[in-house]
Amino acid sequence: MLIIFTVQHYDASVSLQELSMVTVADQEEERRSSHLIYKMEVVSLPAVSRVAICGGTHGNEMTGVFLVKELQKRKRKEEGAEAPDILPVISNPRAVQRCQRYIETDLNRCFTTATLSVPVSDGTPYEIQRAQELNVFLGPKGSVKSVDLVCDLHNTTANMGLCLISYSECDWISLHICRHLQKEMPSVPVRYIHYDVPLSEAYSLESVGKHGFAMEVGPQPHGVVRADVWGTMTEGVRLVLDWIKRFNSGVQFDDKVMEIYTLVKTIDYPRDPETQMITATIHPQLQDHDFCLLHQGDPLFLTFSGNTEYYRGEEPLYPFFVNESAYYEKGIAFLLARKKKVNIPSVRVMTRESV
Image 1 (tube, one colour):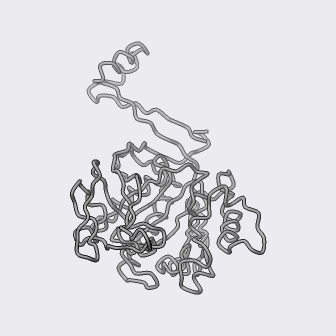
Image 2: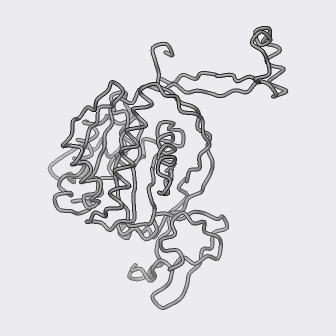
């Protein structure tokens, strides 16, 4: 349930007595002249009571694995009525045990409505079975019973800093959390990536919650833990929970204008038409330059024979997941996004008075 409140702000030079005499017609006239009155929407949302912190969705992305294991050692419920119930989840325990991305198929591609509805048999891939188990535990997806927020922890070999990846550009909870991280972690580049996909086709774990995002932190090689990446992710999770506690306690978060990156397309490596083997690597001028704007004519690839291939797109776009090692098998050298600004309304927790 979503309730919109209208808050009117008046010029300080106008007295309360004068304001009390303003009629509806006068207000409409003032709106047209736009000198005394403007509108700001305040969105009232339910408390975020249950939060799933998931790691090991990819079994070799180790920071999230160890962070969740640390959370499992602590109390599930922190002190204070405003603190959410935290559900720490190792998403793919078999893959974690083997320290590999997955056992049979990528778990983080198994959460579409269609895949979650597949009848399970002895021959069903393990990750599809596990996705359905997680959907029962944390969902069901798209229902009122699902957890309030899923934060799925990931590592990337790409130089992406900290990114929150979501299927919505109007999930005000996730967007305000991202803004909180940007404010409190000034030394770390924090970005919000939007995959414009309908909920039924959203394929990753965070789509099971009412709100959700993947927290992607890199660069870090798969199968290892770097201290700097560990510090960034643990601080990111701490700040996520900090924002939720403050929101649940009644703090109102003001409206913001934020930049987000919306996925436009993926780019594959150049390949041999007969063998389908790659024939180039990421150009040195692009390597480690995630989110640096690409213009027509900028170098993309350096072929193994020494030639340079250039960006031919007419629209300047932003590359990310550049040379991600796990994406070689998916035929992805990098992804391209369009940056835009979105207006985020003020939010506060829903109370009995606001229902």
